[in-house]
Length: 381
Ligand code: MG
Image (spheres, rainbow, N blue to C red):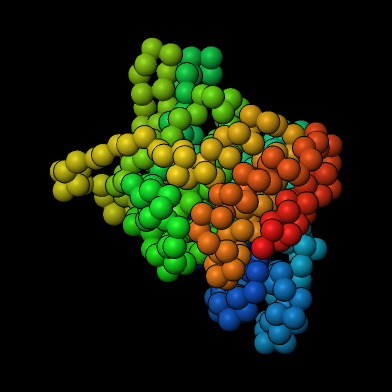
């Protein structure tokens, strides 16, 4: 098993749960990064004594540098810091759980430094596409999924028949807080209502993405890229209980699923210990107590983000980066009370139809598409 881990995004929901897993596995932590949560990062630095701590925000980095000057931990800021954390000499594995496509360059940097990557930052794969998967392949590193659905598929595929026998992937979706609602009923929903997720405790950005079902749209794109499957061969089924985390179907119509209580520490730990398994503090699954599991078709019309992502994937080029960039901006504007809930889907759809699509040759092409998509959204509020 790996000995030393670098955690990008250590103060978020996945980051703190990763530290919990790392504690139980007895791992060393060589780098920790946060966007701007200086207080929690200081506590983590004092507990784990990493070689490097990074705050993306320059002012907060200066603040941390001052408060931990009694330790040996070096402090860096910005993208330079994130890339340094992704390329730590002593890291056996880099877990990337930053929020948004700011994680793209660190993911590629980790691959270039020959580091295996545990990826919780789905936006980098959505925006970066082939640039990420090519960097992983060319450098011969592993890209291990942390997202619960993708971990489920990855687990189902262990010891699987050759890929040509695989017919489709079936992603489960909780449906979020607004499952079953009509567009009319969603017109005036508040940020507080959208943040009230039924099953998972997550950060604010992904919880809103779950309410709009953008999260599932991003996950379709993520699955297509991780498992080299066409978007037409990826289905979504709404499963309110979040017990089945996803399924695969073979050409003989045999379907294999992965189940467990909804606790991210299972997929996090599997990405860290793969291909081995270790005991976990996560609760056992008691099916008799759950009693029944339910399944529904998703509503692609009400949840426009879901259809927009499927379309962007089929369009190719930077269309998925455009969908993601427009959503990152619209999601934030909704949380700030500047736009209404349904406008998120309208803006994502509008962006993929309006921002020019090109075939990206470099990361700069992706960053440019992302910037144009964000500008498209800003110009419309
Ligand atoms: Mg997920």
